[in-house]
Amino acid sequence: MRLKIFAKIGMYVSNILQLKSMLTTKKYNAEKGIFKESIRQARFFKLILLVFVFSILLLVLFRVSTTQIENDSSALFTTLNRVAVLILDSTSSVSAEVYDAYEDVIELSIAVESKKISASRLLVFDHYLPEPVYTNNDEKKLYMDQFQQYATSIKNRTYAYLHSLLVVVYVFLGFMSFLVFILYFLYKSMNESINSSLAIIKDGINMIDSRLNMERVDTFNVPDDAPEEILALNHAIHRIDEDIELDQQIDTIESYGSISEMLENLASALDDLIPMDRIALAFNDNDGRVTAESAYVKYKKVWLEPGYFELLSKTSLNMMIATDNGRIINDLPQYARQNQISESTRLIIEEGIRSSLTIPLQSNQRCVGFLFISSCELNTYNQFHLKVAQRITKRLKHRFFHEYLAQELIAESANSFVGLMNERDNETADHITRMSLYSFTIAKNLSRKDFSISPGFPREVLWFAPLHDIGKISVTDNILLKKGPLTTTEFDLMKQHVNSGLKIIKRMNQRIYSILNKSVLQTAEDIIRGHHEKYDGSGYPNGLKGREIPLAGRIAAIADVFDALTSKRSYKEAFSFEKALNIMEQEMEGHFDPYVYECFHDSLDEVREIFRTHQEDV
Image (cartoon, rainbow, N blue to C red; front, side, top):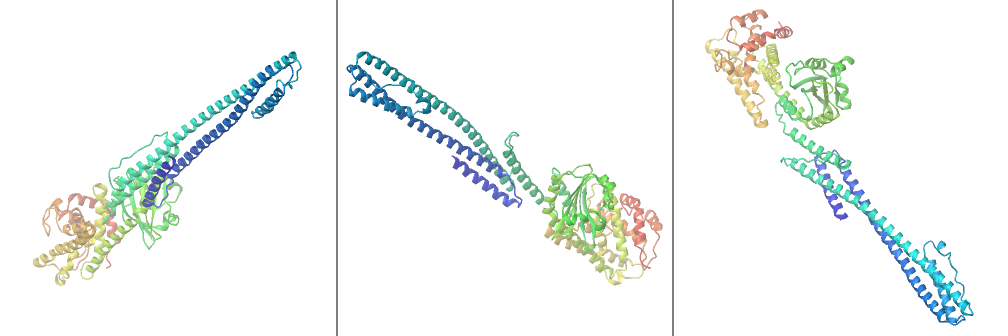
């Protein structure tokens, strides 16, 4: 039975150890409980066996001892009877037969007494049998009385001894039976405990196996009053299952082409594990700057936006790089009062963030960025949340960084196209920069008002607004570089730059889609398609009207017109800031989306600052 139980233990423990080795390099110590149980059971079993063997040996010893005493006593009693008969049959004088029988009695009496336990007490005879010396019948009768007293005494003493010995044996057997019963009860309880542990391991393996096979998982629990080792084993199995489930949830997160969507999906996957109102990424560059890349927030008021950067040396993040440890701040306002904080920290406090959890992103033995998880409540995070966040970061850090690189490559590709255009277009690089920043400002302020707008949308507008006139690469120089207004025919040819640009970007987008299964250049297409359309339907190339025009196109249309009015061209002088606004409001009624234009008007302070800091060289 014991070998069978140990065989089961070995099999199940071997299975769970192999499973844990496959799942993670982290060692779980849950199997210690089952080994402790098996060791205890083995000890109890050995103890019961030893008690049983000891009892058998004592009983054998008692039996051997009592058997010898019984045999000697029987011989003694037979001899005593024979002596009594000889004395009665003898004459008035002692015969040789009587004397010989007397010596046999003395010898057997000593043999019986010497075999008794506590012989030192029992050998003190209550009666002494003198030698048979008598010469007449009176002396014979007197000796016979002495002999009978002696015989009665030694018989009584022997029977009393055997009775007491029997009592001792019964008491000993009772004690041993009680002890065996207690040990058996403990053994049975331990056996039930180890069977419970085996059942937990079996159920745990089945649960984890179902989890690995993406099947329906039947969870199990043990009573709260179960032994400590069983509770610890149950806890360890559930932790393994939770880790597998978390890894599977992380693996299902789609991130291709959009870190913003990746963060949104990650926030949804972690909703039951880590409380959060904001999750964000920032990346380091070779110039020592840390730039806010993207964020997913559950509130509307956002001040720390994508694209904001600071010198890493000016932030407290710099201290985390050397240690590679995460950081928990559960009272940001108090932290700000006690420490010199960065502008980015001040901005998230302004947003209402009160607790923060920060994890460095390590890739190729260097810190490439940080993952921020934040809450609007005080004292939100603990070491469990930090551990989960670190696990997530280790699983996703390469995907984070690769997606960041992919986005940067797309943005740089866009800039390369723009650079190519600048070599032959009469519009300057400053126009491209201003128009992109105007578009970004409008999109950013729109996202603050309209919560349905993706957090990554303003950043994409910033990236792809420079591509709005990429199709002009197909326009001939005599039209593109012409001094003065274009003829109707020339203008019709110029209008084709929209479709040419769409063709270029669509081809690129389709190629990326075939690889990533995601349209990462959709915003670029929307900007190119819609930046010459008008809200009243009088624009080109397709005469789209109202909301038929993509939002990115409606934004770019306002930014492009405003910068064209305030810029100098070969065929016109630049209008002033106020003059351009007057023209847009009075002479271009129906051209722009009223809601987007209102947002543009509300952003004039930022627009004016961009206009001031990005003037063209005269």
